[in-house]
Image (cartoon, rainbow, N blue to C red; front, side):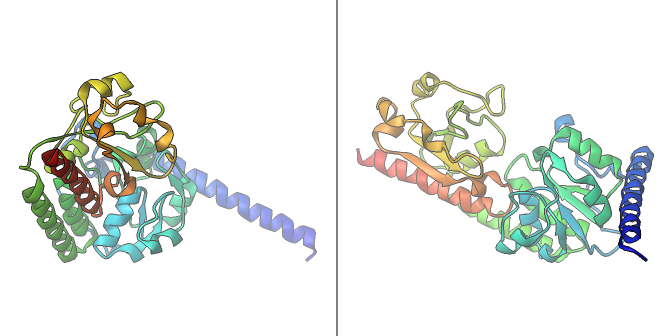
Length: 315
């Protein structure tokens, strides 16, 4: 058989594989998804989260489509079951070697179908709605790790343990999380309040107004100066920050926002956080990823808030 014939056969085989995948996607898009729809949670529609149920088979392969989902799976002892994930899923160190098939807005559906995992784990809250709708059509078992408050993280760990058959480890890690969270709250939440401005992004100046971040600050005995706004992540002016007179400015540093230093706060001496040199960088992954490591981030935030209290008392 000559080389031209071999090349033609290879091309034909490759084309047939793509046609089969396309046909499978088309067929699966037409399959009724009622059985799995009950297992999914759409945060935007405020649907009720169903109770986790034990899998009907041993979970051997998992695709995790959000970084904190990866961290949760490792936490309950299932890191070795993750066969594919998304960009920025970089903790623990071994997670860096997992195959990448996309990010929160774009997933390689062909690669996902070829993997055909026993379970897809993702955060609906961190995934675009069009992508969620695409995933639903594939009729793959899915588990949502979204959280609205810190206490939800322990619930997700326990539920994930049930959904994957790792019940004991899920419950153990959930209890450990709750214990540490309770200790941090007891230590800091009742102390005198410190006003905090949380700078998510410098240009345009963007902060957070609700959700679990407000709860984290409150548990540290702090108050978000832009709490309970209309938008979840409002753009604000320097004048609006000045009026609220924050005592601490927190600037999370994470993938994609290395320009957090682009604002020169030193020219605004009227702001207590500026005049008292309480502008602090924190590691964004520790507070923005709602997985088990968030308590490390919370502990750091609480320490920074407490330092402001001590400085204020000494003035």
